[in-house]
Amino acid sequence: MSAATVYSFPTTHALSSGLSDFVEHLSSDAIKKHDRFTVAVSGGSLPKLLSADLRHNSRIDFSKWHIFFADERCVPLDHPDSNYAELKTQLLDHIAEQIQPSHVHPINQALIEDPEEAAEDYMDQLKDLFAAKDSVKFPVFDLILLGMGPDGHTCSLFPGHPLLHEHLKWVAEITDSPKPPPNRITLTFSVLNHAHNIAFVTAGEGKQEMVQRILEGQGEELPCQLVNPVHGKLVWFVDDAAAGKLRVVRPVAYKL
Ligand SMILES: O=C1O[C@H](COP(=O)(O)O)[C@@H](O)[C@H](O)[C@H]1O
Image 1 (tube, protein in one colour):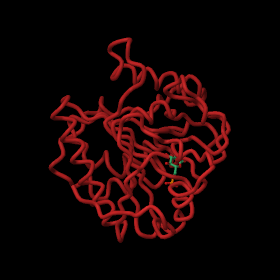
Image 2 (cartoon, protein in one colour; image 1 turned 180 degrees about the vertical axis):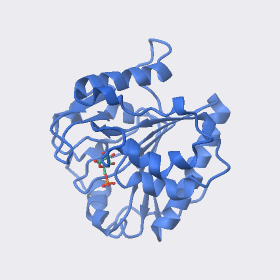
Image 3 (spheres, protein in one colour; image 1 turned 90 degrees about the horizontal axis):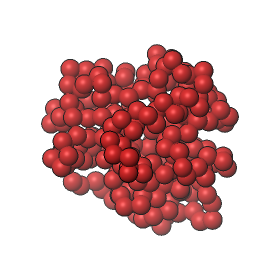
């Protein structure tokens, strides 16, 4: 995997605060450059770690944000398994007066019974924002926020799954996810790797072995190791517990 900067924090509280500063910095840079901030957010433990501090950050102009989902489970938007529902609880409900509803892009709920159609529809949503010109090969997000599953999966890209070799689609369907629910849609590596910035966010002792395998291991093809930005920057936000087994990669303290 390409050289990543690893930021480690003594507690998840400190991690959330550092992450909020990081996102604020990227958001303000992107808004200065192109008057908007495009971000894709994962589910699982990420929305909580992301939002604890961010939702109180009054220096951010959320009205310029366009929020997509790095992956989504094919369930209703108010289902406990929905990544959108979790982000809504953790962040969107807290910034509802600042964010424009049309700038938040959940999966089309009418299509959850047909993951292939749901994925195509999601690609159309991306095209509406990113591909005003036909020449756009892949959407280029200002930031993609990724989680890391204990098996090394990220988004809904699982170890050994054929989707690891999907290079054409922007959004793919998966109907045999080893982690329930089985039906999902996910951004592909082609989209992930074209982002300006990618941040993995993970915490807890339960993740330390996999963090070490991903960042220091060799000869494996774990999904998180296939995240290699073409031109962008790759960073990890972890707590000291998750960084506990790193021996070669030296985590650094986060500084703007
Ligand atoms: O199923 C999923 O899992 C991953 C990892 O979740 P975590 O709870 O171990 O952090 C998550 O990044 C992904 O978005 C989600 O759909």
